[in-house]
Image (cartoon, rainbow, N blue to C red; front, side, top):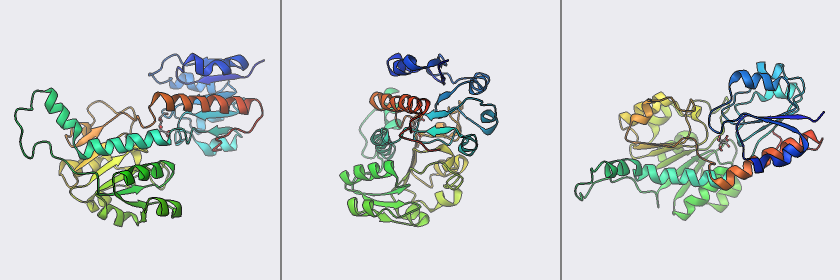
Length: 320
Ligand code: 8YV
């Protein structure tokens, strides 16, 4: 009997063809509607390999029922949707898709910074609604990006790719990270700062840390209050790192200038989410890695990891 693979979203045929040659492949047949909890549980209990998306929560209870499961390959660099402790206890390998998405995600983060600071969304909205009636000296004015200071929270691979872009805009790079990054300090003249100091000094703050017990709620009311009134906050790693209620208050009361959001506490974002009603929020639906080339490369890594584990080889991007 061939090993069985379950994929929780519809992936392109040409990507999964190599899997189909070797294994029995079952796939949830929608590209955009998430697999139901019921189907996910049923599949986990039977299959040898699972290819998951960030929005599939794989908890201990589900993993307890797995009898044949050898590998979960998650289509993301983050893997906070999977109970990795429970997977470890069950001897299930977990893999992710790092590196291939670094530059694409840094592009999105930098683009979101430009769009937020320069108020692309409200300017475009006005234009489309026929609100551009005359030229006014201070109409649609935002904050500069070039030559300002940016505070990068989380100087990992994407943080460094962001710093590289910031240098091209002649920005001073402040960073906060669990450990000092001497390479980044040399290469981008990045200056290490304690979190409070970074928040007080940066003209733009970019959140790029992974979601962990330590980073959950890391930016709350107290931290937002430290930021400059003219500062922007760009959130592109995980929603739960910023307290959304505190962020709403800071934006509504204009104690910070604006926020650019790619990630949210709950995804997909519920309709009429309060943050989406604010004019000083620029929001996109978690599209950090969403370029055709990068998404293909991520899926390719999932296919390779599943094949490697099912053929008894060590996969490239094992996190558990
Ligand atoms: C993913 C992400 O694009 O890789 C991650 O951790 O957040 C995004 O790059 C997306 O969530 C696909 O699963």
